[in-house]
Amino acid sequence: MTPDLEINGFKIYERFLSLEAQEAMVGDLRDVAKRAPFRQPVVPSGKKMSVRMTAAGEFGWLTDGSGYRYSDLQPDGSGWPEIPDTFLQVWDALSGVSRRPDSCLVNYYGEGAKMGMHQDRDETDMGWPVVSLSLGDEAMFRMGGTNRSDKTKSVWLRSGDVVVMGGEARLAYHGVDRIKFGTSPLLPKGGRLNVTLRVSQ
Ligand code: SIN
Ligand code: MN
Image 1 (cartoon, rainbow, N blue to C red):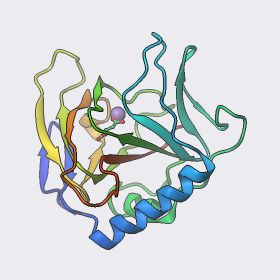
Image 2 (cartoon, rainbow, N blue to C red):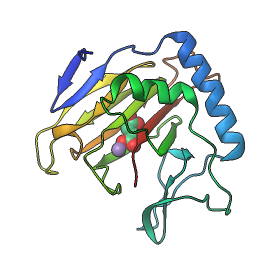
Image 3 (tube, protein in one colour):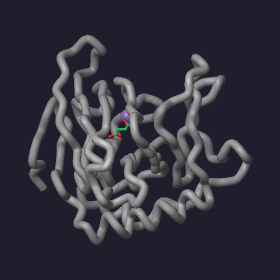
């Protein structure tokens, strides 16, 4: 499938998810959050991130005082819920690979939340793509290259958009400058959910 936009290797599929699919996904994420509650992560420097985070799959991504890592256990010692099928279907449609993800990271952006420029590099094999879904409010997504100093471009991601980060984009810097709170009716309390599917091990 041809992306609607391709920027620095980031493939952007606009409105790939129907409204029905988005609503089903929000319901699935509510079930995930019942078993794996959202937490406000702390980065190794001790600062709290502005997003809230949870995960599904064999492995969840954690950050705390001791660093970034994938873990098969939640901080309270329980396992993670399974990755909902609705997300696996998107992976199958757009990832271009047959191996399935073992990790599904869920970020919630409330009013004022953002995510600094970073690379996704805690996975064992960075040859596998990352598939990223947007649900809810619009977000300004910034994309650079593999060096922090590379020139960046940004786009507004909207509810239902899917971004595939593979090839040259797999290790490219990216982040979310800000969200436009209240621009989507999908989440009753507003905000944005971002779901990333990854092969972590
Ligand atoms: C991330 O890079 O983990 C999040 C990207 C996004 O929220 O769109
Ligand atoms: Mn990322």
